[in-house]
Length: 622
Image 1 (cartoon, one colour):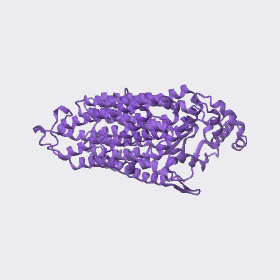
Image 2 (image 1 turned 45 degrees about the vertical axis):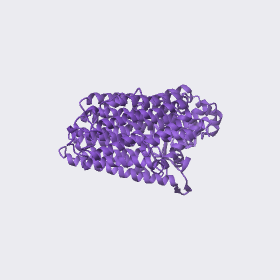
Image 3 (image 1 turned 135 degrees about the vertical axis):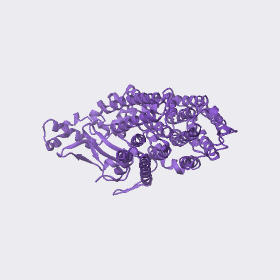
Image 4 (image 1 turned 90 degrees about the vertical axis):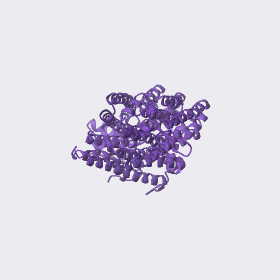
């Protein structure tokens, strides 16, 4: 019997793709039907994400089992505790011939939001999904923005069927990345996002759409190549000392069978083949354990690592800890590959140049998703993959990474101030605001309390920026539909004919500015506080950059909304459809700013703090 959470997370991931398949049978001429079916697909996905969210809150409260109540709250709420518990009650899965499938551990039915099933056993590739406080808010943000962006897509008239199908496939790719705990599966979803976004920009974009789409494709593909190299480097590391002994036994039995023994005889003599039973995996949780061991080995704690490992072959483990994975060169090289691959998506200076072009040419709904979700995948990849697997490199390179974050903040703000294209200004503001994410992640302090501020600030900033950036791009699209241009020097006076639009715009832009009481303030404040404990110089520069942000935001509001302009006096205010899109984003911006603990931090912090604690212990942090 399959686990309930396996069904839920699978549905959450693939319902959009299922609706894309349904669209195949809808005539291309039935544009309204295509739009409604697509909107229904995003609505169902949003509803499933809320169901999963309720389940996640139950997990935080504690899951009742035959062992009693498991209190996964606080430091134990992070993913690894649930994965280990699931494996503790698992059994080795066998194939049709009765032979054990190596690495195919099948958890007992549960609702702990960790689920795995064998996918390609020969290479230990699993259909492995899980949710924690790092992925859950990003999943909710994705499903909400996809729903609102589809409403914003109602004005698309060109090739509606193709647009809707690609839109739904893009949603599947984004959600899959946030749920995948198998690196190979993550990479599949990462690549699934590439082609839909390429075509959505290249077919439905502006006058220079082909150039922007190709630039986006090449940059993202380059990042994917770096990530793929790191993926292969990790896979060809023998991690047998960090998995359950049953997996090593299953691999040894497989070797015996390949040498001509029956399954029964191979199982009886499995210890004979155990020395050759190398275990290779894409399991991100297991690779994280190996990564922490690598840092301890590099810190001179090899004997302690051997003593605490679950391996039954302690004698051979000392030799296996001499693999490239446990060397400083490998750790730094793989971390840089991962960081560059994910930094392109963030984007981090100087890998950012694809973003303004993509935003300017993309249709409004796609710009909403590009800024609101896709940029967050870069930060998520750094948190979920780069830091847990290569912590020694992350700690060693903390200062330059923090410096890159500050450069992003300052450079993006100056670049935004220089723009005359409304959409390009918002694009560069995204570069600036995502710099806070990099800075918050990078400030790895000797005291975990301070790094927790930075990490929680980085996560909060990703969610807040997802709300405000999607809102700003939508507001630019609203006025573009009326004025048919984005030249900031040719607007002025929009508040007079469009008071509701003007008021909504002021609040959304103030939220992006970081005004206290709105969502943008919380994450930035946390990051600046953490940066001060790491480097007062970086903190002062970061805090001073808020003045630059205020400058370009206020100057933009003045040029677009204040004063009078007879040319726009007949512009209609926001329609009902536009209000339905804009108001939820404003409500979220206010709620996250006024009640950050209740609406996000209370259920996000346990996982973030758990990650910080597990890594801080490696440097002696208390």
